[in-house]
Image (cartoon, rainbow, N blue to C red):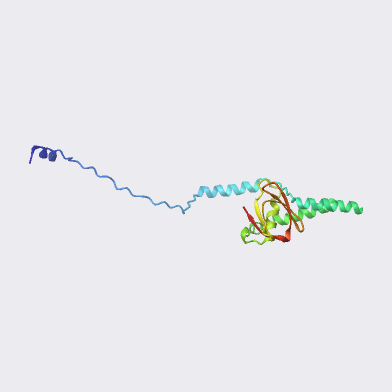
Length: 183
């Protein structure tokens, strides 16, 4: 052995430090803990909610009711009848109250997928969006294999009015419509 090898053996570390063994903790995300204080807070919140005055319920009727009401008033005036508007308001309130009494599952009915609907159901689906800020651009396919891409503007008895993407107003017969695609 040489002197260098002896020196290396003598200079090896005399103290070895043990490293701790780290344990990975597993998260338990599905457990919920509740203290007695939170139960008391919930009871207090319920009591304070009962003590507060209930908010007024302002029921707004859809515009369709107003249009029907206005048409009926015009017809009544032309016929010389004076029907009190209070009766009609009560009828509207009753219909609005019946809608409020429905359970959430009855109010929020699942809607079919657009591709599963037939042509009439698709038109009924698109009608409420007429005149809204973000209309659906759709592609309308007719029996004569013409395709019109645009926005549905009006649906009458047997007539469709479509504003195409190039600015034209297209009026077509509703019976000629074969399919609608939202694009």
